[in-house]
Image (cartoon, rainbow, N blue to C red; front, side):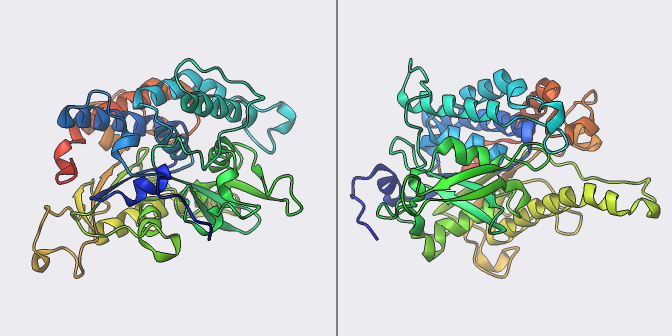
Length: 403
């Protein structure tokens, strides 16, 4: 392993004393705007509580992780954007991000990749270069290992060649981030990794990433959306990376030492009360199984975090498991789990079923429309859902002990 300078800004952030705070953002396409509005309320509350009117979530959270659209949010926060800037990115560029592919390509993909790729390059480059900077396509791309990032960043991708999830992080101590490697991950373009994490099959084409570029070791991998791994909700994956020895972050666990805030993009159970057995065809399964598996994995990791963690807030997962909420500092003998809690945990994820929307006083918002991930006409409604949920459910008290 190559030596890393003690004053390396990411390493210094990793080793800073005190409790560690982790933010994770789920995938969900344009529904990421729901997450953005939840984060806007969280950012505003933290600014008031800490008396820092310019506070950024990238400075409050030590480690920010995201899958798919959550990867966009995570990268933008880690680059030092405010939530308001991220909101503007989605609202202003939603139509461009989902630009229809040429008619002869629509058998393979629904949307063009280039507009989103260019938008990501421009946004991340200009943000890190500072106010007033102008994007120049001839400038070298911002890399994953850019030292101007605010802290640790993890993006979840799926490597099609190896048929495996790829959590890519800017941790300077990680095995594949060593600068003496010709294929050091830290040299990969940040925009390309974010684009790869959002490359949802049938929606966008895959992203081909070149490793060890310009050397005699050069090779390529094909990546698709991290949401089609089991980590569309990356909360537990972030905990694993922060604590498992192979990753060399090695943060201390404990309900007073680690906070994980997990933000979803809206949860609507795909109930089919009119389902008929004859509908269970090969085509029907091909259409519905990927979504069912993704939703089950998202809920499953949420449940794992509520068992291992001291859940401060979260909606009911199901009628048997419930919400598993536990008050801070509950004695071990009165805990809702037989083991020691490893971290404090908060889960924000609106229920976007008809019942859930009615509870938010949004009877005019279509629950069926909320299940889509690519309808940019829904941007105002998605913002309304996020704002309404955040106004009722996001509370600074949920972060007690970490503010």
